[in-house]
Amino acid sequence: MKTTSLLWTAVAAAQLIGLPLAVQAGSDAKTTQEAVTQADKAPPLPLHTIEGVGGVVITPIAYLVNPGPAGTVFGLPSASLTYVKANSKNVESAVITETLFGRVELGYAASRFGVGNLTDAVKGATGIDIDDYVVVHNFNARVLALPENSFDLPVPAVTVGASFKHNEGINDIDNQLGGALTGVGIWLSASLINPY
Image 1 (cartoon, rainbow, N blue to C red):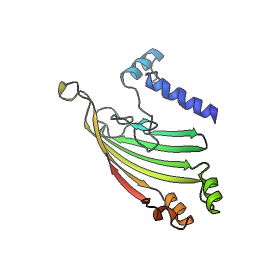
Image 2: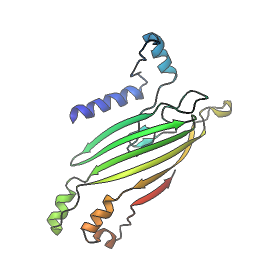
Image 3: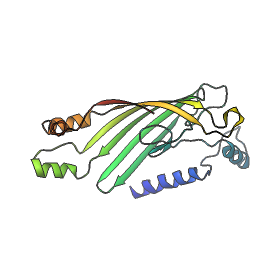
Image 4: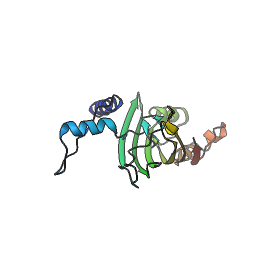
C-alpha cells in the first residue's frame, strides 16, 4: 500500500505544479516538445475528490474535469482511484466523470469507508458485531456558471452543482445496534441531496 500511496502523491504533486504526465502517441503524434507545449496551454484535470467531483482528494475546484475543445459535445472521460489511510481507518474511492459541451460535468463515485477499531469498541461494549465499513454512492452534476476571465475581467471561474448521496451502510449499523444510533439522536438517512 505504501507504494500506491507514494505513486498517488507523486501524480498529485506533478499535476499541482503543472508537469505534463503523458505525451500523445501514434501516427499523427507531434514531437515531444510540441506535446509538452500543448499540455502547458491546456492541462487536463483528472484529479477528483473522494466524492466524485473535480478537485484534489477532498477539496472541489471550480474547473470542470477534462472539458473538450470549444464546439464539441464530449470531453475526455476521467477516472481515478484514491486510497487514504489514517491509523486504523481508511477510505477507498473509485470515480468517473464526463464533461459535456464544456459546461456540464457528470460524475459518479463509490467510496468505501473503513471504520477501523470502532467494530472492536462496539463489540467490547455491547457484544454486537457491526459492519467494519460503509459504502457511499455519490452522483454529481456541476454546471460552469461563469468561466474564468469572463467579460474580459479578471474574475474566477464559478460552478454550481448538486450531489445525491446514497448510504445503506449506516442504516445497517443502526439496525445491528437495535436502533441505538437513532436512539441517541443521530439523524440517519440512506439518501441525501446536497446543493453547493
